[in-house]
Amino acid sequence: MNSLKIFSGNANIALANEICGFFDFSLGKANVTTFSDGEIMLEIQENVRGMDVFIVQPTCTPGNDHLMELLIMIDAFKRASAERITAAIPYYGYARQDRKVSPRAPITAKLVADLLTTAGADRILTMDLHAGQIQGFFNIPVDNLFSSPIILKYFIKKYNNNDLVIVSPDAGGVERARAMAKRLGASIAIIDKRRLRPNEAEVMNIIGDIEGKNALILDDMVDTAGTLTSAADAVFKRGAKSVSACCTHPVLSGSSIEKITNSCLEEIVVTNTIPLNDKAGRSSKIKVLSIAELFAEAIKRINSNDSVSSLFV
Image (tube, rainbow, N blue to C red; front, side, top):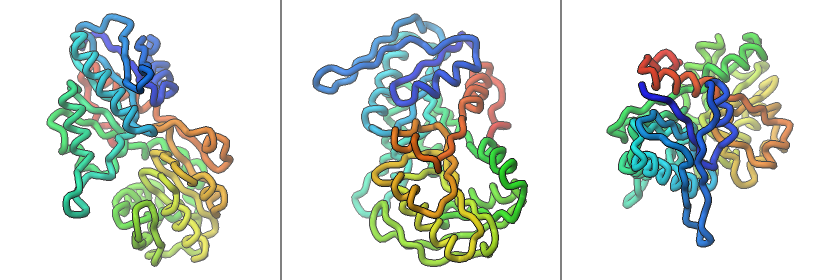
């Protein structure tokens, strides 16, 4: 493949620089600023003609701004004659809106896919999509990496198969919990919840044996932390010896940090797909694992046209 170059918007420059640390070059030079009225302005400050360009940009808070930055960057690189443009989106925003849940509702995850494709992206590299079927919204190749190898390594060292039970906070996460439990040699439990209104959930029942065990609640993202902390309290009241949690995407909006701080959670392990805000960064309960090496390996394999499938563990 042609020369490789990695660029970044403003969403997670630290991650992009860390990924570049696994290669023999620095982050590409691009200046992303705004006009006084909020319009985004981009200037690519080096030649990219004929290059294999990767843009590292999670569409995290403020999601609309970061999505627009990404679209503008893709368009700019296309017009600058880049050979191939891969949108490396560690956190794919709007992924929760992947189907119609009520009449006259949009499928925004599909809209975002159309926007990325129309802007000129040739390929998508992402991690732990909220719903795997989002890959089918694209007519271009999509590589959906999993954070589980990184998280597994941490918890194998911490628990060493010591009375561990993996807890799914809802029925939709059972497959994810089962896969993690299999690799850790643990049992699983499922929390049956009923959602009363958006971003609020009520724990109803727990399916599985958790008494006297170390409970690990597994989810793909934590937003307001209402579901997570309610699940942790319910598990602890049912006799769990300890309760921890892990997720890939630390959205952590609203009063999430206060809820986590005041909960019975010993710790919550997250990855750096999304940079932590100041309040989250100061929390002693939040442990961050880096996905940079995994993304760097995927970028290397895509660039050299090697198989990426062995990374889907």
